[in-house]
Length: 262
Image (cartoon, rainbow, N blue to C red; front, side):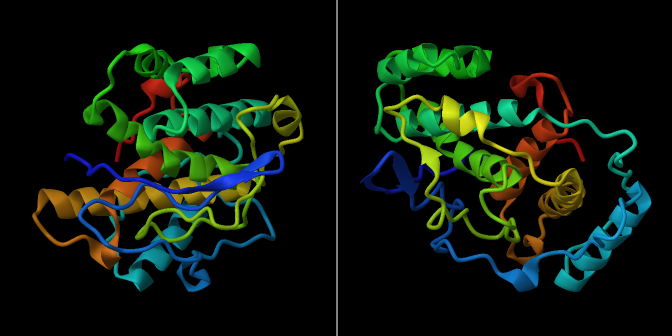
């Protein structure tokens, strides 16, 4: 399904930082970005590490309350005894790469400028083959740029995983970066920002992975049956969030190989 080309606004260069104030909008929607609705956040106990079944039960309870269909025999997500996670520096480096790609897609940076920046600060190896192909392509079209603008939703997840904000909102409206002011300025060395990054509690990451997995099944099921999206969910946001969470939890080794199976 073709996503509409969207845009976001950069609100000037702050001292050493950019403040990103918008992101790729949900297709066919005029919904504006909103602050996190805390009433739309699933509850998971913090007093112990959850088993896969416990996590599934809490996710399904929440989704049923939201009016989102669930599937009892949808498999479990790996628990803490099996799950693997990306290294915090790898996550931070990827966040910088995505930030740069989004700049290029929106015309804030040229491909040449971004390639030079990524090579200068030893981030070129973090750029996936597909991303390199995009950056190296001359005369990019709207079709080339549009998927990259949606990386804003991937970046949103990575910044959350790095503890830049506390919660991921229910995936009905585009991500909101109005309070996120600590991304590195793409004119200076991002290494200090990368090295100072910390990965949030891995239980939080597993909770979100389990939840988005079950949400994604519901949106795909609605699509297959020609039904309205439950709870005003956005298929596009759900897919991009699922992709990023699967990358965080090592669903495949390489970025380009990540899938969002349900």
